[in-house]
Each structure stands twice: as structure tokens, then as C-alpha cells.
Length: 179
Length: 280
Image (cartoon, rainbow over all chains, first blue to last red):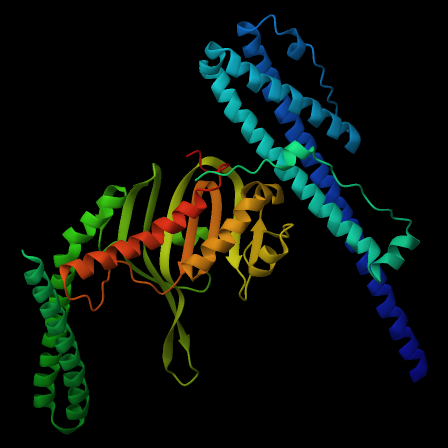
């Protein structure tokens, strides 16, 4: 009888461990989804700001067709790769606009343009934060899939590693130094 | 007043204050003994104790008042000073609302400074938070929950929700615990936030390095709250700003005040490196 209790106890403890590890993995995955939607929100905000900035810039530099013809596609539920592509396109537009502002002093001194520039900078900072949060959550989840004993549960449930968000090399160095 | 007079008067007043306080304690002990033997001498020594205590406070206050113009001068030389209130501190409700310190019930403080440093509006003061704890045998002891410099800094960007950073000790803040990608920072600090993305927004990789450096510089237990467009910083360093203890000459006292202020401004210079929060 004692042996049966011991076996039942071991089974119960094992079941609790499996449930708790499994729930832990689900929670980690939910955090990834949450962070992914954070990136989407930040991308949308940046897109909106860039669109407004382009509208202001058009009034000053109508013949700069290259920059105004660039297409950035955004939609809800984008894959990670699509988000990375949208991010890269926005980087190109943003860089182009900043270069244009240098060439057109009237544009550079436009109050609306300057305010939007600050807004874009904030949106970019938010995007960087969302990206770092996403990658931090992915790293934590991927590590859990690799280490014992959570790797056993992950294999049983067929869970696979998630991809990290790859920022462009130029954008990785967006830490500003001021002294 | 010449520097020599200043030094002589300051140390004279401080000496008188100390003597009065010591005499008050002695008279109080004598009173306690005499109460059991003869009531009338006990009343006389009791009154003497009260008088000595009162005189000690007066001399202490006079010594402090003497140094106020010098403190103000030092503050004005390094920052745009709006006001300096030697006997004021942050209101209890404000300190309570930051939820940076737990367990305290009494608040004491001094040297509330309001102004701008490098164009950034801020306030700071000395703060001491304590509570009474029972020893189990009807006696109580005072436990210090925080003693040091408390700052309120206005930044250029509003943070939604609250992000709290606390040097690791027992007890946690409210909110979700956030693990950053900086292992060394995670080991030294606990970060909690209503919205983890805001924590990553505030804590850029470079800013985390800066906080570690600033914390080492401050040589204190550091606690920070980022909320709306305000930053609250508690530096548990047991420092009493502008006290200038033992300084006998005016120059020594001024130097001591300048060093105390530099302690605060150097810490601020490190925080201002965060270009997302401060557009300097």
C-alpha cells in the first residue's frame, strides 16, 4: 500500500511539473505574440509619421520624385519578414527625407516638419524598444526549448524555435551619444 | 563678516549647541534618578534639562541660519535656483505615491532645492524615512527605511505607465518583472513595469551601462521611478547635504557644499546621457 502511495505521489509530482512547464512555455510564447504586436503598433506609428512628413516635404520639393514614389506596404498580421522589409523601406524613406531637408533650408526650418522629425525620432525609439523586447522574449523562449527538462515537453508538444527580429546594421547603432 | 569671523562663530555656535544637548541628557538622567528620591529637586533638574534642550536647539538653528546665504551662493553658482528651503522636504503624499520605499511611517528631511540644471527643471532634498518596530518586550526601536538624497527630474518625454528600477534587495515593486538583455544589469537591479515595452524604451543599452556607472559613482542603493514626464531617484547614501560637519573656516564650508552639490550634478550629468528622455 505504501509503495502505491509513493508511486501515486511521484506520478502526481511529475504531472504537476509537466503542467507547470507546459504553461510556462505557453506564457513565454504569448509574450512573444504580445511583443510582435508591439512592433506592429510601433511600425504603424512610424508609417503614419513618415506619411505626414512626406506630405509636408512635397510642398517644398515636388520634383524629388524618387523619394515620393517609394512604396511602403503595411497591413495587420504581417509576418516577421514582411515587418523587417517594411522597416527597411521606412529607413530608406526616413534617410532620404533627412537628406532632402539638408538640401532645402525652407523645408528644414518648417515648424511642422521639425515637429514631425521629433515625432519620427520618438517612433523610431519606440520601434527599437519593441524590437528589443521581442528579441528578449524570443531568446528566453528558445532557451527554454533547449534546456532540460522543458525541452522534453517542447518536443512532446512539437514546439519549434522562433526567429529573432533582424535589424539592419545601420539601425543597430541607434544609440546616440551626447556629452 | 570676514571668513575668520564666520569660522569662529560657526564652530562656536556648534560647540555651544553640542554642550547644551549633552547637559540636557545629563540633567534628564539626574531627573529620572531624583524622581524616586525627592520630587522638588527633580522638578528643578527637569526644567534645567528642558532649558538646555531648548538652548541647544536655538544654537543649532542659529548655526544653520548662518550658513544659508553661503549655501544659496553655491547653489546659484552651479544651477538656476528658483528656491532653497532649508527646513522643507518633499511632501509625504508625493513620496508615498512613488512606491519606491516600503514600510516607512515617518518622514523627515531638509534642504529642498528647486530650480534648473542644464535647463532641466528639478527638485531635490535630504530625506529620511523611518518606522517604529517592536522588540517584543514593550520597547520599540526606530528602523531607517531610507536615508539620503531624493530627486525629482522633469524629462522631455512622457512615459505611459510606470517603470521602476531598484537595486536588488529583499522585496519587490508592483508590476511585471522585466528581464533586459544586459545580464550584469539584471543581476544588480530589479526592473518592473506596467508595460515592458516602456521599460525597454527607457532602458536603452547605453543607458543601462550609464545607470550602473552612476550607481557606482553615487556609492548608494539606487531606486528610480519613471512615470509620466517625471523621474524620481532615491540615493540611499546616508548623506546630509550641505551639513559641512566639522568645517571650521568659510572656505572649507564652501568647498564642502560645492562637493555635495557636485555629487548631485555629476549624477544628473550621467542621467542626461539618455537622449530619448532628455533633448539637451
